[in-house]
Amino acid sequence: MAKVMVFIDGTWLYSNLRSLGEDFQIDYGKLPQAVGKQIAQKLGDRSVDIVRIFLFGSNATNYLNADEEMVKRRRVFYDVLREEYNYEVEVYLVDYRGRRLKRKDRHPDDDFSPQEKCVDIALASSMLYFAALPLAYDIAILIGGDRDYLPVLQKVRLLGKRVAIASIHGACSYELMEGKNLKGVRDFDVIWLSDLLDDIRLVPEAREIICKSPFHVGPNPVKTDEFIRKNRAFYCYVCREKLRKERPSLDVDFEEEPAYQEPEPANGNGKKIEPALPEPAKPGSLHTGDSYTGVVKRLMEFCGFIGSPMGDFYFGMDDCTSDTDFYKLRPGSPVEFIISRLPNKQYRGKEGNGNAEEVAMVVEY
Ligand SMILES: [Zn+2]
Image (tube, rainbow, N blue to C red):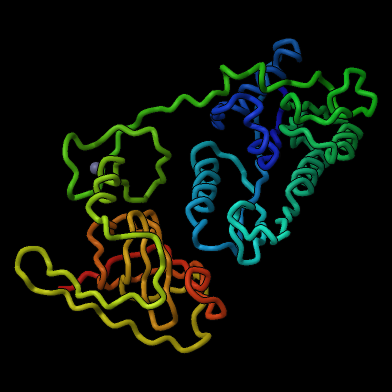
């Protein structure tokens, strides 16, 4: 049995997915096996054992809050790869220096271009490291296509290991793919992902999960094909849409000083919940990862802001703990949370907000 490790250049893969079809989505659970099967055939049906799967990718840091959802979606994607498919994911942060992520959202005169660092070197280091480790693998599969990998593929082969390349037409450097293998970079013909589409296509799979909304109508659990994080409250699409309609006054524009809003009466008995006053923070005494308290200041369809003496904290619906119902939060609700980013007084408005996670409603008796 041949031991195989798969090394995926995640950045290369997302930016070239479209070459496989306009809306093509990869099933990351099937990708390593599908490529491994090709190797098994090339070895004359000797079976292969995929012992490790690595994916190297990046995410944004120091960006504006307006792009929080995009960054979070990427973070969830990496978590799903780790939790569901046993990938080992290495993520390198790209510093946006307080800017928006997409060029079209930045000022036309801003010639800033984000620098992704480390991703290819990290992949090369791991591939070479395990090649030099006795018995770690027999065959390395690179899922990528950049010319930068040429030296590492040659060195891995000098250590007596075999190399396979799985790539995408139009996104593979000539030196890696040319038929004579003049540079000595591989031991098999290039595997083209376009030949494996039926094996690696993501077929959305409906699952059943309980919608946590108190206003949910109809059968519960509901069927969904959305990615679901473990230990997070789930709200079905219908309930999320309903909330969007029921809160038409809520918009995503940030106000510098929102007017104070009277807390809403507690269910039925007319008794008002008095928000707990957060303890004033001593300047500089709080850090990322610390627990802190505040009062919900503003709510939007899927996110909100928590006010505190040290500034405002943004949180998304899925930043609430599993026993906190986002739908039950009201302006004025006292909450506890973990600081995932400190507010920055240097900036005003959106740019200056901190970020909160593990947001929990403080229950008043
Ligand atoms: Zn629902």
